[in-house]
Image 1 (cartoon, one colour):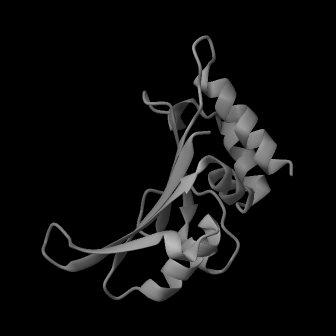
Image 2 (tube, helix red, strand yellow):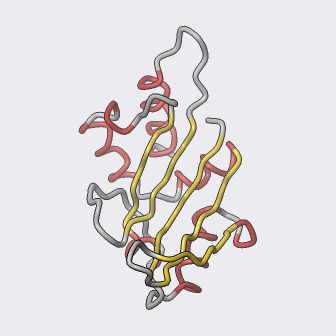
Length: 141
C-alpha cells in the first residue's frame, strides 16, 4: 500500500474535538489531523476533518478496525470497492469510531468515516488480489 486517507464531514453541531481525537487515534497521529471549516451547498457551516497516512501508518490504522467486519468485506467481494486508480474505498461508522470500536459499514448516510487506501500494484498484478491479501493480513493479526 502506498498510503491512505481518512475523511469525515461533520456539521457545526457535531463534537468536532471528539471526532478529531478519534480520527487521530485511528491514524495514530493526533497532530496529523487537519480540520477545515467549509460551507455546505445551502450555506450552513460544516467541517472536513481528514488525516493522510504513510503506507506503514495506513496499515496500522486498518488493523484497528473490527476484524469480523473486515472479513465480511471479503465475503461480499472487494471489486466494487476498488476504483480505476487502484484505490480501495472503505467506510467506517462514526459512532463506532468515537466509541473506540471502529467497524466497516455499508451505509452512505451521515455519520460515515471514508477511507481511501492507494494499493501498491505493479504490472502483471491484479488490484483485487492485492486488496484481498491486504484485508486478510490486517484482519488476521
